[in-house]
Image (cartoon, rainbow, N blue to C red; front, side, top):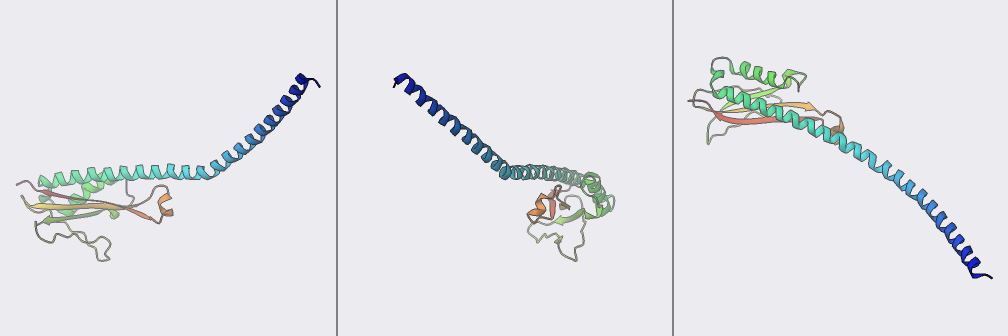
Length: 178
């Protein structure tokens, strides 16, 4: 037999074998890609919604921080001494947080004169007998402000983790102007 012809037959067989292996490998890779998509896509969507949820929570928390700073500055200047503490603080808090809560009754406001070294405990908001306190003190007094609200999550992703309500709260201690 002619060696050139024999080499041609072998190379044709090898080419067919390589072509068939490449074809089956391509089908295998497609199957793996489909499996990866089926397993990874729900996780990617979950991460996306969780990221959006965290962004909204951070935004609400930053808004609460701004409201707490505004209220404590106003109290520090002695504005609350001229009117009822509860009404004045609540009005400012409602103005600042109007977009974050549907029911303004869910906003919690506690103001207490802070005495260094004493047991300065604000009432527990989870207690059934919880009654908000408001005492803005006199000039030169140290005053503790606690502002907060509860809100359900935005997307419902957190409810899968057993978190039904998110509690946002700020406690600020300031000294009134002398």
